[in-house]
Length: 535
Image (cartoon, rainbow, N blue to C red; front, side, top):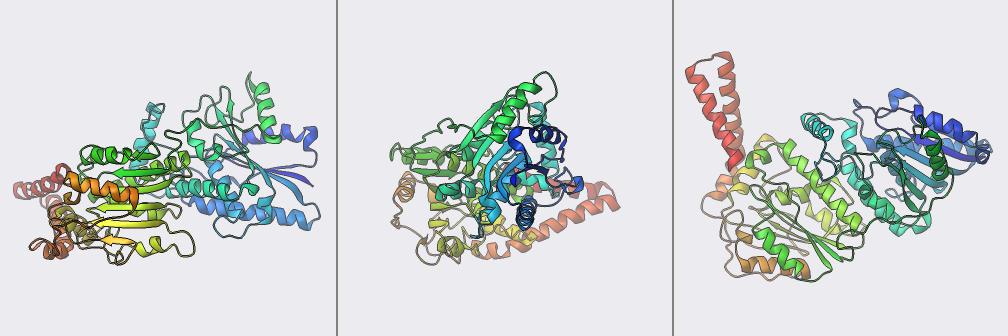
């Protein structure tokens, strides 16, 4: 029958430029008998600004639609010889996910239509997702405004949020894509990224997970911005059509992305600090110790800057850092796809790891070290250490604890009283599922929140564990938590709940019966809670 060209539009579902381009392509001698479609056909079904559906469901529906189209064509005796998928901006993410789905990347059951996909054309594709970080080359007023709007709408569910850099959807897509392409070189389609030279949202580096493989290419579209790559109007329309026609209808020459930092690294270690800290002090010393291992060891010490206890107490701000970490992780994997990955985290850094493992099935680490962990005691480590039919997602994990760790014992555990089940006192009371090798959970180090990292000797031993996978239990550990802290930890959820109720009651008193006493009491409670921002 010929070829099927199927286009998935950007956010908002605009297809005018595609229809114009498709009309011209259909008139080419090489396209006789080919079909040009877009999906979804009805505007109300497309991903819009106010759409609430998850992107993986949209992508799953796209895969199902492709299977249906291909089956109908085959039953009619006019099967497609070849399928070309095109996706613009957010649509590029849907196209890639649908192809992986149809290829059996998750189910292990490849569909016939996926084998017919010879080319995937990404039109300003959000390969990394849409980053709201004010990074070099992206510091614009427009991005600052979008960053503020995204923050304001954080509590509300919108489908486009799945396209943010570091979202579970984007991260799982990028990691699964790289691993599937590496394992199945015979199934790789040609992949072309058409990127405008004036695009302020996407950079070439963002597509390293795509361009690193053979049959992948980066093509610059002169003068185009993010949403007008397919626009053929204006004085440059004729020249642009020639370029688009070539890379949509014909094979493109492969390109190679610029080399990543320490491209030859065999091991990559993330060292992530906790609340009320930064990438200095013990982070700097451990980075130096690990880097001294050799040139093949890359040490990544990302920082989310000062993060107060108050910010940690709010789920919205706490979870936003998870997206930040997943973006960092997927970028490092894209730059070092064959390397082993390891992790060292303290306090909130351990929360980032725990959520990364829970939210993204493709996240893997070989050696993990936790100090003062704020994860819950019932965190499902067995699931990640066992592998369940596949490679273990964590090779070995070690958790060190301080016997007077107030932030974990009281704050992290206490917030569970407000039904925050994603945090807890695993780094104080212990993890129930770190009960056998390859897990290590020793008795307590004497001291507070950073006790396991407190001395140069301990830091050297931690670096040795991360580089060799072996650990020697130090002398001087304590079997029991300090004093009454264990009891206080068990009661802390009730205490936090009581404090929250008092604050709400005091504010209600001010509203219902304003007066000097009620206002003073409410102000005192608010100031006391706000003080957490500085401790």
